Length: 328
Image (tube, rainbow, N blue to C red; front, top):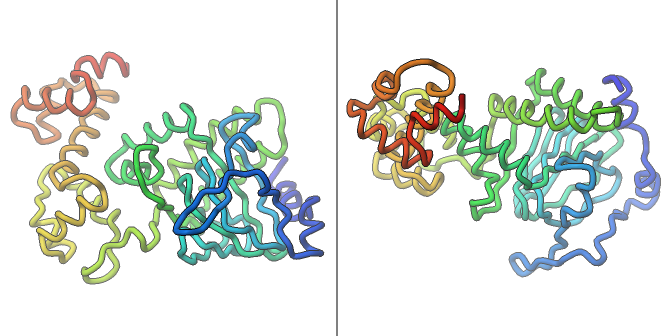
């Protein structure tokens, strides 16, 4: 399947759409599904057993011409707008996705989708939270505190109901990656599922380049629109000489207020974030260079080698020497 054939496949009426275009009623079967009470509402909760018989990733076209009722599910969902636009309500908030954009939802986020028109093509990419997926997300979280924060937004350990909106419509490389991935999945050639599994980390890594969080991650009381990611990105780039006072001045915040806000949004103090970035950078140097551990410790901002050893073992559960040996 090439991209032209993919376009024809996605725009063609499927069997469900042939019914929904006549009735304008959703025919998804929620009977027998678990009902979860959320804010006084009983919401159907879709279980992963209906989707992942072939592997940890399931992809389908969202059926057009009828509203998708409010529902939840036990897996991660990625909505990709192939064409047109899509109106959704995510955890009570109305959002509009336009062509080329992606929305990443954690499990158990109540959401509904308004009826899609003829030109509104949305593809649902579902990811089961199994060892493959969690290992993948864990690897991405080691790239820096920005990607770590993004991946924590869909982490098993977090108690939240967040989603991430990526304004990826201008990123042509991402569109190319997604379309290739869809061609592999829908064509079902030999090794297609393996190819999809290989495309997923490439897709998620590219999303790290084009991230843009929705307003539920924006910080209040600053001049202009400042996302928590803007601040984390600054820390990531300036961790060796960044202070809370300098950070607050850069983004026009009171230092105490910003410190409390960072703790609230990330679960870590400012010093914890600095420490995390030092550890992530030192681990990268251990994996990818032949520099001595002493040089690495100095490069990431430690004057005391013994203190660096202690902090590294606390963070990774093993000494720098053992970490380098295992990763090599």
